[in-house]
Amino acid sequence: MSAEAEKCGSVAVDAPPLPASLGARPVDEETRRRLADAFPVYASVGLSPFGPSGVLLPSDAGPFLERYYSTPVEPGDLWIVTLPKCGTTWTQEMVWLIQNDCDYEGAQCLLCPDRYHFLEIPALMAPHVRDEIHQGKNPVSKRLMFSPIEERPKPWFVKTHLPLHYCPPALLERGKVIYVARNPKDVCVSYFNHLLMFKERRPDMNMDEFAQMFMDGEVSLLPFFPHVLEAWKERNNPNMLFLFFEDMKRDLRGAIQRVADFLEKPLTEKQLDGLESHLHFSSMKKNPWVNKNMTYAYSALTAEELAAENAASKLEFMRKGETGDWRNHFSQKTSDEMDAWIERELAGTDLKFVTELKKN
Ligand code: PPS
Image: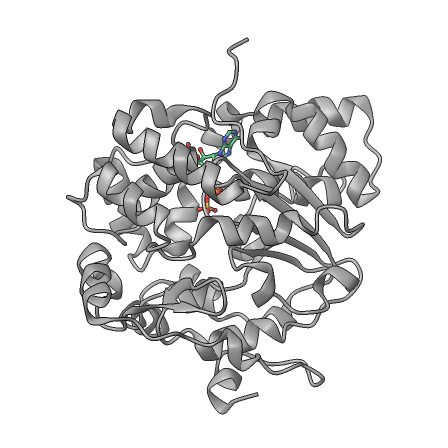
């Protein structure tokens, strides 16, 4: 373990070091400039592709990744692994409630950091944002970013957008993973909104321009397909549950039942009714513990500044919660290019995405 990694939190004694192959790769000057222009928040540190799939992260993420890779895992620990905007929050709320015997009162606190450890959040922050938070400008973010996982009560609930090869090597042997995938066309639209809301992208970027960068893996935490396909290969591992956002939309009750079976937490019909209603988009949209306050938790602004900004902004974390909304955002050309990209990337696999659902 490097001295830098030790500064990013405490580490398991028997932790394997991060393999050299998972380090940062060089970026050519033209790409560096394009990324700095698109994502100005990272301009000072730069974004670099890491590891075999080239997952895009702030260039100084190495020591953090080393730290995350060494996270201890014990039986009972639950990890939600997703690409951004695939239904992470929805699944987090579902898993937490099922595991905690539908304790709706206990669920009245922030998903992150109170109920889940968001693994890579410090690594995702630009250094100046990390510094501002260190200086105490946002106490919730400070708690979110700098509370060591070891201080949490067991079992641990962990959220990560990192691909499986950056998770602790023992994760699927000792812990349980719920992986959620969503069709990339809707993810792209949702991510476009998210990055504006969190001030990570140039505000005047247009959807088609962003979609191109999305397909090229030039957006933080992408590329898309290596992440999903790595998890898809593990879908029959008894410690992995692979879910699709679109299945949760189509049959929420069925998805709740699958999660309950996976966690070995039998639910009564009454509990199923309660969860189905609580996890419906209209309820989640109104629930401050999974919604607006999340923005507060991740923002470097004070609560007052953020309240003023939220009041003035039309951007929402719980935006539409639909499948097929990409139709309202993509040009025909971008839509066709995305279809061709999806087909190319999935050739030779049995993974299929649903990009539209029949209306009831
Ligand atoms: S994040 O920031 O990566 O954790 O975002 P994530 O939670 O993965 O994804 C946010 C999108 O999930 C939608 N969402 C839901 N859809 C349907 N039903 C429910 N209950 C629900 N909860 C969250 C949320 O609205 C975001 O999608 P878009 O398409 O932007 O609306």
